Image 1 (spheres, rainbow, N blue to C red):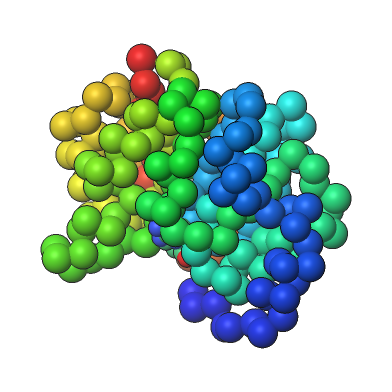
Image 2: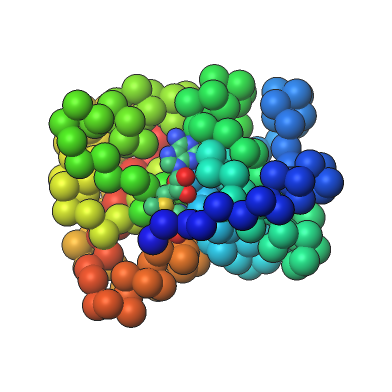
Length: 203
Ligand SMILES: C[S@@+](CC[C@H](N)C(=O)[O-])C[C@H]1O[C@@H](n2cnc3c(N)ncnc32)[C@H](O)[C@@H]1O
């Protein structure tokens, strides 16, 4: 699902700082929040924010067109408890304070099939270390994927990490609490593709 470049995306983001979190704001932010990494076109981010108005949700997305589409949805839906950062997760994670994130959502992350690219997978050990550091005690890492190889790889990296795996579901029905469908998920479900889910906790 390639997203066609939209020239309005970056100007729209620049004109709507109210839906964008700056690095300074993130560094000085008080209170906990939920985090989605690779938020794509923003359906999940916005649905979770609307479903759980008491939560603050931050989306990180590095693709400018996807980020622009999400920013537009945040503005149009007048969402005030979610914001977006247009950046790569590895640039942002070090600026998040220890034990301030309640949940981290990785929805249909890029599978990076070539072995030499495995370090880029969002469930590679170095990422898991950062997630563990920023999560509050009892905080969860929630992963959905259609990709068998990424599913197996993630079980392995998690088992080598400090996380405790709570759930491994081969054929996830999409009905868990604190979840919403993403754009990719809708497309996979329409094609009857299996969705896998892993939930891990920082005890
Ligand atoms: C396969 S898409 C899934 C999008 C969305 N989560 C969904 O399920 O519909 C993966 C998204 O993650 C973004 N992404 C990949 N690596 C990233 C990173 N390191 N930091 C931020 N975004 C990333 C990509 O730009 C892309 O929009």
